[in-house]
Length: 120
Image (tube, rainbow, N blue to C red; front, side, top):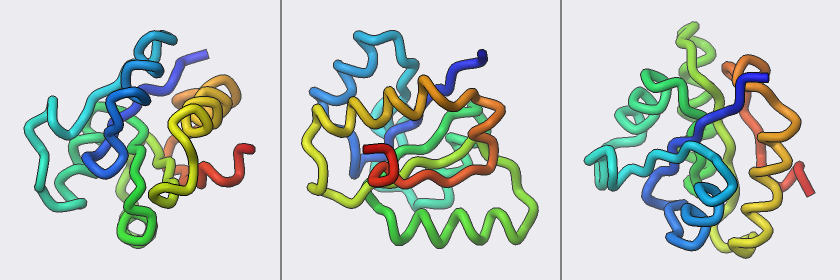
């Protein structure tokens, strides 16, 4: 199974979460590492799509809307995982992201939107 890679925007980039994901073999790229801090959501989304990374963000409302726009325009993406800010501890985010990664392949995540709350 082709494992998903994750692009984490600046809203969700908590050092402990990034370290925990990487220590478990997850390929993670952050907005800071990509030089995209402060850039528009569209630019962040395009970066993730170009690199076949599932976008992870706490900016749920804006990225949910952007996902709909991409779907209507027929644009391809690696997928998206959204979580409301401060709803889940770092440990809970980690468990749920790893659950998604263990269940979904890169191919099955293509153009898909997942809410972290659904993976409890």
